[in-house]
Image (cartoon, rainbow, N blue to C red; front, side, top):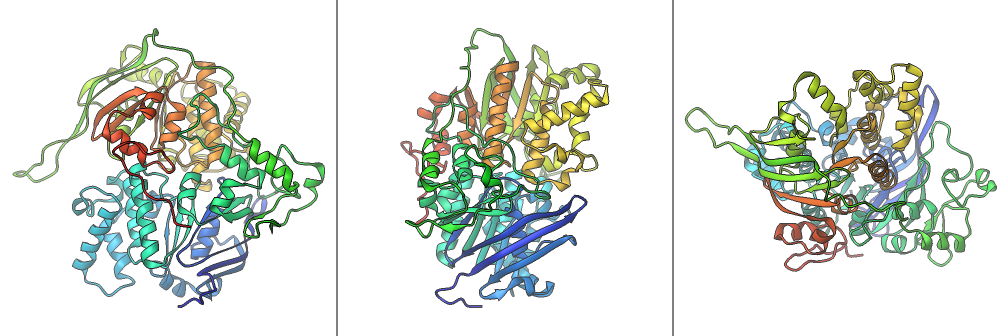
Length: 627
């Protein structure tokens, strides 16, 4: 299929997607229109539940719900996709169109090896031998940054880390060099150096193949680096659309300005709190009248609840369209005044206090694989790591996927026994705790896991999941009081209490992550180990959660071990930072000092990989997209 020079490769017009539920029709996508030309990238941003993923799934023809009501037009190379039957759609998917899904654990089949799945995607659309397809699959796994691809090609999905699964799925999407790539949060689970490699790979393929991309993400720094144009979605509608440089320089919608103000940056003062958007996204089963953003907009007027704004171009910049009832001069003044607010109280020095957590010469080894006569040497995942964490302190733990961060976290939590070394919490050896002592320890030490899909029981409702810690520890036995406390926790993490009766499978990835955070906060523990706690969250909710953790730290003396691949978030949250590489702690320093003057070459390379980061001596950063 060829496209006329003046026609976009993908054109979506007045797309509406609704779902029939017990609460009525939920309008997940309501009149969305956009286009993507060959060789161009459109960034689609917005909070969880704004309709981004539903838009992408409908475009790919992957919306399987029998309750879905779809109308409008989706044209690919002039061909109406909504009119195709399943056989015709399957022919296009994987060859002409491909998608990188947000959750690799559910997108990869657990019963088949990763390499088999990549080879299958290749041979379904191309005449190629098994050996040639396997060789190409190994090459692709290496290109997306998976170490030892010749061995990992035969791994099952559960044998790979979250970041490695994401990279394998990216390789599968790129295997047939599609003309249109829809990337739904493609780098969320990746550390910054691999993220930089993947983004550069996507840019290179786009240049070489003329590939169009629809790039869905909550990371606005990545959007600024990758996208030529940006569409901002809120409550199922596009509220602002513009070329990327125009939108970032002059945001016109209060919601866009709120998203930009919510981002932690490497160049902002570490003592400042973030400025999240007040309130939460509306229930789309009964959306507010008029402007859907007016209940959260501090500048809304009474008439904004009655009049529905239309997405229309600005008089001085026709490529910049906005759906807002505020006057242009008011919108510009609001955007110019948006900035992070100061914390109510500065952090106090804690050097004189005894350490709450002590990690001494921690080692974790796994048996080597192989036969009886050729057994490999043990793999040392953690190799002699030592650090302390004072009461009320936040210790950041950073490093690439596979460096041992999560293994350290699991040993601290008592979920994994160390090979040698020790972890002491308030002077107690964690590995030696059993029975009642371990149960008492669990109340004081909680974990927010990286993968909410795997850490939440899908057979229980959200309310039962968050209430479970109270039941286990015999707290709040009166049901009404327990339900009230659960509702408070859910609201704390930016969710509507109406979700309490739903199950994790009914929620978005970001919503599931917030449920996991609410469960960890329930018992008001002394120490929280947060393993990528905000990686799946959109920036406004991320700001709410980070501010909440900081407030709890100030009010309750909460201590945090904060693991993340987002170096700006780690800097914002941490007093000190441990940088890990290949199982070792290669640098430990005060956060301000480490980010201003990184001593280790590996630390400098990590910082240089952050989108928009300043360049340190001896490192390189990738070039921004050519607009």
